[in-house]
Every structure is written in structure tokens, then in C-alpha cells.
Length: 456
Image (cartoon, rainbow, N blue to C red; front, side, top):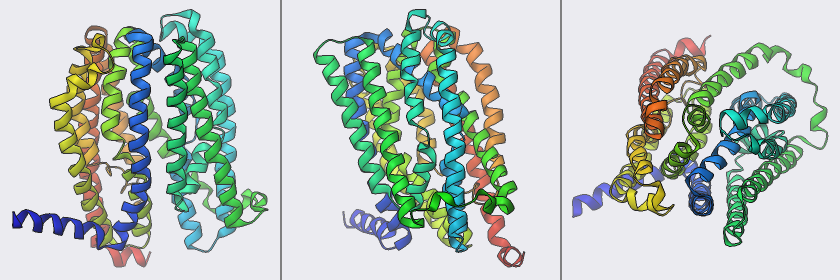
């Protein structure tokens, strides 16, 4: 017993004695609490939706919401990482005007992309209803939910700004508020026996509330840091960094696009190559595994912020400490939670309705095989971006994307939800293994030549 207590004491000291990781834990704690509460509310939303609309109706909701969000993300420039990375560099050099110009440029690019994305959602809604939902009468709902794209005018840039200036608590509060609003609206739809349109409206209102709130607070933060006239900072201040910014932006966008086409568009792939019924089965399995991943996801953001700063300062011991400690912390949560789902997953799926058994439970078990390693090794891309290799994850994800798309043609028409679950687990295992190995090797190389790099 005493040895167990000593181990727990040593583990707690590892996390709490180091001020660097204490900051990660504090910021993660804000997002973790928000994500956990939001995950619980999302769980409730899913149960209400599934019991109100059934398996096929739940599939329709997933297809409609993912159609708009994926077009938006396809056009979006994914500015959060770029804003965090380069605000750090400009601020460290005392170039506050450049930092303001960077945020302005990111927001303008994102606004243009959102406007284009909304046009595409409306134009492609009839086609999306036929191909993915197999129901042309739903085209109006596809276009209606597209209004969420307009609300996302500068959401990514705003999120990056708030993350850099340590406003994780604010992000957490808004996230919880948005989830609560959506849950209340879906709960009302359930109690009053509303239709599919009421559920889609509830998700739309929640999305708009989240995006507008984050954007407004980010504008307030920009004014606080750079003054009332921050938006007048000329874009010409970024002239010398233009090539570097474009390289970083293109690389991270290609990486994000590959994730979108493979990992985050599965509902649409499944709808196209199978049926809305199979989408409903898979949507529930993914919702449960997302519940497992949500508490760990904030670690990616908070760890990236600290790792980027420590790499910029060439504090390699701190970088390794952050990665080891983060891995241990993620494993302490992931392993017991996964065992719990293994033992009680059938009961959890049953909460959505007995119609989801046994298919959703089988898909859940298959997904756990890939979710466990990607959860524990959540930092698989965190090191490579600030080391100046944003293109490597893109290359690996491209290869994995090609394999997964080929697998979709071969497996999904016959195995449906279970086939998609098998492909996602394989994608997680392949990409995580390669990226972790590359990250550790490059970190070791950087440690061996600190003098050369400082003199460059």
C-alpha cells in the first residue's frame, strides 16, 4: 500500500512541481472541464435526437450538419495554428504592429473563405441531398443549416488569438454555454415531438452562438492588446514574412484538408456508399468515442502553445518533459475509460435506443482499437510544426488518405458502419505511429546541434 501511495505522490509531484506543466494543466483544466461538460450535454443531445427521430433520422442530422461544416472547413484557411505560431514570433521580437497585421490578414482571408463556402453550400445543397441523404426533399434543410457557415466568418482566427493570450477560461465558458443552449433546444423538440427541422435548427442556433461569441471577444482582446486602431495596421508589415506565412499556411491547410477528406467526412462517405441507416449506426459509435476523446483534445491546444514557445527558446528538456507528462496524463484517463466502454459499451449504446444494437456496439469496439493510441499520443503533430516541418504530416496523411479512400470503395458498400470504423482505426494507427517516430527523431537531432542552430 505504501508503495502505491509513493507512486501516486511522485506522479502528482511530476505534474504540479513544474511551473511549465502546471500552466498546461491549468489551461487544459479550463478546456477539459468545458469539454467534459459539453461531452455530457452532447451525449444528451444525441439521445434526444436518436429517440425522437430514430436511426435513419439521426443519420440525416449527421449528414446535414457535416455537409455544411465540411464545405466550410474545405474552403477555410484554418488560421488558428498560424495565428498562435506567428503571434508568438512577432510578440517575442517586440513587433506588436506586425502581430496586429497578422491577425487582421488572417481574419480577412477567413471572412472571404466563409462567404465563398456559404455560396457553395447553397449551390450544392440539392446535389448533397441526393448523393448523401438519398432524399432530395431535404435540400432546403441542407441550405438552411448553411447559415452556420456565415456565422463562422473569423472563428478560427479569433480562437487562435484567444489561445495565444491565454483566454482558455473564456473559450471554456462559451463552449459550455453553447452546448447548454443546444441541449435545451433539442430537449424542447423532444418533449414537444418536433420534426427533423426543429433538431437541425437547434444545432444551427448553437453553432451561431459559439462562433459569434468567440469572434466578438477576440475583437475585444485585440483592442485591449493593440489599441483601438489595431485594424489599421498595414498588411505591408508582413511583406518580409510573406513566403514563410504562405508555406506554413499551405502546409497546415493541406494537412487539415486531408484529415477532412478522410477522418472528418466519414458521415458523408458512408451516406454516399451506403445508406442513412448505416450513417445512424456509425454516428452513435463515433459520438461515444468522441466522448472518450473530448477530455484529451484540449491537451493538443495547450501543449502546442507551450511546446512552440519552448522550441523557440531551444529548451529541449522542457519539450521532452511536456511530451512525457502529457502522455502519462492522457494514458491515466484513456486506459480506464476504454476498459469501461469495453465492459459497458452495449449498455451505453442502448441508451440511444435498442434499434442501434448490435451494429453500433460492434463499430464502437472496432473504433477503440485506433482511438486508444491516438488519444495517448495526442501530440503526434505538436512537435513537427514549430520545428519547421509542417509538410511532413501532410505527406503522411496524404498516403493514409489514399489508402483510406480506396478502402472506402472496397469495404463500406458491403460492411457499412463497421467497415468505416475499421478504416478509421487503421488510419489512426498508421498516421500516429509514423508521426510520433518522426517527431522523436527530429527532436533528438535538434538537441544534438544547439550551438549550430543558435549561430545560424
